[in-house]
Image (cartoon, rainbow, N blue to C red; front, side):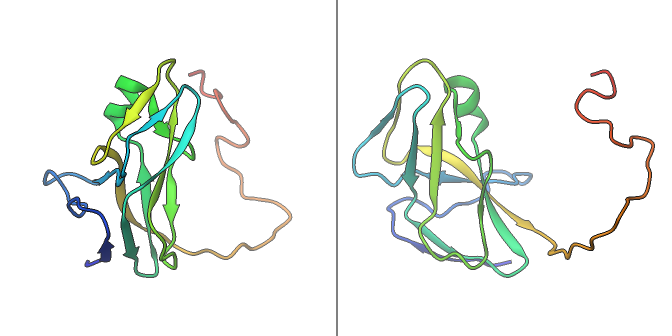
Length: 143
């Protein structure tokens, strides 16, 4: 599948780094470095604008290395870019560590994953079919 992209940054287009990669790195398109203080969140621009086909979304996901080594993650868990959005892709980063962290121009800040989805229609009913699990929630299996 081809995705149309306008790149207003000076960085490469997102690309897969290995044959088995699901995500493509996004780069911080900054004029100046940004320091994220502990428990602070910032919006980091990428300079990318994309046109996603109907039936697909782009997901912004945290980079595992940033999360593990520095406590930098996404404030919204996974960011969703809908197929009808045409604005700049921005990444909401959150610093969960106890130390300041600096994002520099060109740093890899997140991953972009393209995902197919189904649109559904809800049908309101009075009861649901039963299952072995039933209403068992968090920890119901003993883990």
